[in-house]
Every structure is written in C-alpha cells, then in structure tokens.
Image (tube, rainbow, N blue to C red; front, side):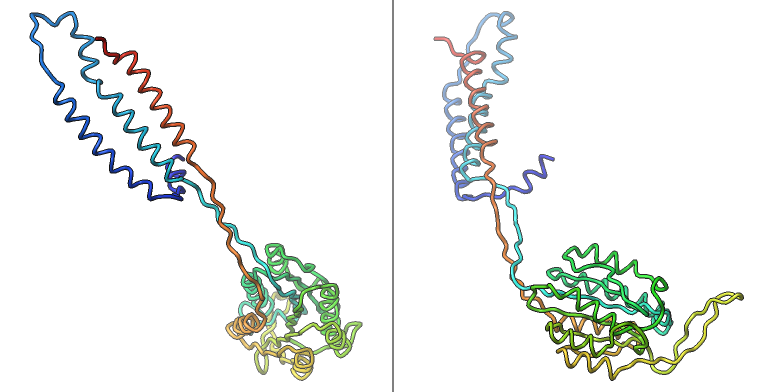
Length: 334
C-alpha cells in the first residue's frame, strides 16, 4: 500500500533535489571532525564503564544520522510531492440514434451465421461500443413495433436490451412503416443537432398501421436521417421450421424491397445498404459510423493534491528525536 502511494507521487519543484548534494559534503565534514577529535585514554581497568561505553560508542553517530535524514525529508518536502488526478470532460454535439431492427420469423434464416437476427444483434452491440458520446435507443418490429429501450446515454443498458432481443413475442409480419414511425417518435423531442434511425429488415412491407411512405414523410418533417439496411443473400436462404419430427430447414426466397428502402434513405438524407453476409453487415455499420461522426471536444483537466505534509512531519519527528537523544542519552558533560 505504501509502495503504491509513492508510485503515484510526482514533484512540482524537482530542482530542489539539487540541494541533496550538500548531504555528502556534511557527511565528509562530520567524519573529518570526528577523526580529529578522537583520542585514546589508558586506564588500568574498564570494567566499571564498559556497559555504558559500549552503547554510546556504538550509537554515538545516531543524532547526526537523524539530522541528515530530517534534512533529506525537508528537501523532499521543498520539491513539492503531489498526486495527480486526470479528469476528462466531454463537450459538444452528440448524435441521437435509434436502432430499428426487424424481428420477424424470416430473421431466423441462416444465410448469415448463426442467423440473421443473431448477426444483427452482435454487430449492433459493437456499434454501440463505438459511439461513447451518443444517446442510443432501440425499437424492434415485425407485424407491429415495440420500443425495447428508450433513448439513453447508458450504453450498458442499450447493449443488454440488444442482446435480449427475441423473435416471436410480436405479431409476425414485416411492418416497416410502423417500425420506422415508432423510431421517429422516439426522436421527436430530441434536441440533438443530428437525429438518426438505422433501420434493418430482410423483407417487404406487408402489415402495420402506418404506411412506409407516411413514416418517411414524418421522418423528413422532423429532420430525422434514415439509414436502411437490407439483410439477406441473393436467391434462397435456409430457414429452420419446427415440426412434429423436429427442426427441419426449408429454402425460402429472399424478398427485400430495395426500391422502398432506397427511397426512404435518399429522401431523408441517409443511404441504403445491402448486407449479404456477416462481414458485409459489419462493414455497413462501420461505414455508418464514419458518416455520422459526433462533434465532441474532450478536455482533460489535471488536479494536483499536495503531499508534502507527511515529509515535513517526519522530518520534525526526527529532529525532535535527535534533540531528546542529544540532551539525554548522548549528553556531554564538561
């Protein structure tokens, strides 16, 4: 613990350590002084004074050692030992983002690994990690839509909700308009300068209470930029089906309304992307990350806490001990 404390110490005026060069000078002076003053005395017997002499002879340099140590501590205190604490403050304009993810039954297709939904969840979670200064929310949809997580700066909560996405708890279908409208609604009260929806789907609009064109116009009126992602390979994709004989896989045609998704994106200022495999989906989120950069300035403030008092107290304690020894145990009589 003490070692950790010293490891975190820095010095505000380290040039005071140059005074330490006087310590060797004082030691040499003291040694030469004692060498001159040393003398021998012949007596017939030393039995009476042997015990007292042994202690004083062995430790008669102790007061000088204490004085040298106290001087070293005073010099260290003058060098201003201090601990440093760096604090980051982030200021600027972040982006408010809603991730709108299709959870319809077709998202279980295995043309992405392990399937479309799981691949989308993992990439979305990684995307959240890369946006530390933004507020992010989550909307899921199939035949209807649901706000899985309101817009928040707590990214741990957002990631937890993304990883907890499951299909089957909403009415099946692909209500693109309803999903987009719910996402835009979450951004309605946002005061961020940039508001974004990232809508991911693998199908064509076939349900919901709100038409995709209507949802698009609402997004335009609120200046919400929409990036759309069509996920799925070309042709057919294997989809697991549960039957009395167990899970079987059937090939179903991939039908993505790219014309609609492109129109929504282009008219709201976003872009349409097509993800045919895991790597493609990952690259799409990376591209969106580059396109939607937050304007945030990070300022680092350094606080210093002075730590010279323990050194001064230790030096005074050593001086006090030296004086006590000098005028008691090592007192010189005329």
